[in-house]
Length: 507
Image (cartoon, rainbow, N blue to C red; front, side, top):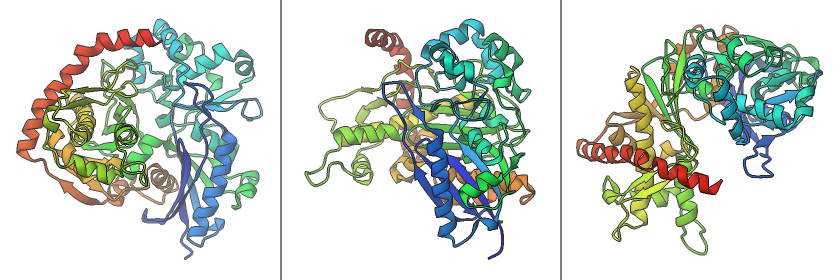
């Protein structure tokens, strides 16, 4: 009972999650607390840092209560959180306004400014990514242009999880995994890029010093300790962005393991031992948790969200049941043969990142006939998401990344039908694991490695996750999907001009 616990904190988009784990990495307690996104007008997505702190206070107390432990049983605190956001602070470290989070779309015009000052090839070579409205740099430029009085008072711009580190320790700090997702970071140097800061006229003093991911931001201050009901002096490890932290919890620290996460969006993740960059910018290359690791990320805007959209729009059941459950809906889809009777779905409900990087891309049902029913559309939606993942896998292979094992995660992975579709579409075996605490567990494991609790983080990461099920591809279905995937790949290039023309009409 006296064994100290590791704390993992994940500052998510809709809630903050806390996990407590023991010396083996086993989760013994967890809790979460929600907070709102402020979106008064289309394109705006903000959160109040005070809400984050209140959620931390609540979730931490619940997690401790859940295992009957007190704050003096904590060995270290690790942090993870949503990436790409900015928290403007004044000289005293107080927030000047709400945080602008990753989902905010107001920096679209600033993308032109970035590409005028930094040509695309140079930007990709330095940062591993093309300019996208989701990154931090467009948000900083938007703030400077549209709220000059706030920007003039701004002494620091922190990423979301780094704001929590400041509140916990009183120290300004960041680390490579989060910083490399800002469009202001030099991948190879693992530090802020003097070239990009100069061209975009952003003072380096606004950004937090970069420390290694496994380093400590500081120790828990007396003020923070009193507020959270903890003893002061607990080491606070700066941690990682939510994507690499989740990969750490899923065993994704070593090359050869590819992670496919079917959540609201879709993420395809693969570690690399060198900064492999796609010259076309179809996938992102970012810093991983270990100092000799990077990762490639394929990002799909609508994965599980596509099925939810379909269910909410077309999945009506009875007066007593507003919508069919996902289990009922996918059971219908499971009655349709592979290929959905020739129906193909482009899942670009929110535009698309990988591989097209096109905000004007749109969703399409292609091949509809009178014989198609709701069940066929359900299956087509699920297959379309799998095809979108395969786009990313094809790019990974083109860049020389080998997939020895593909692990599925996220809510969509709980569907047996979706697991089977993925195995057949990818034509490789896919593994479902027992990992269900994601980035918060990753943060706790990183904290344990930082204080010497774990000698080899990669080894611990690999052993914490256990395979629950492996699905092998079916040769006949895989052959059918290969034919339809070729049609899927041809649709976006054929429709690109029309997507853009429609986008101009709607703007």
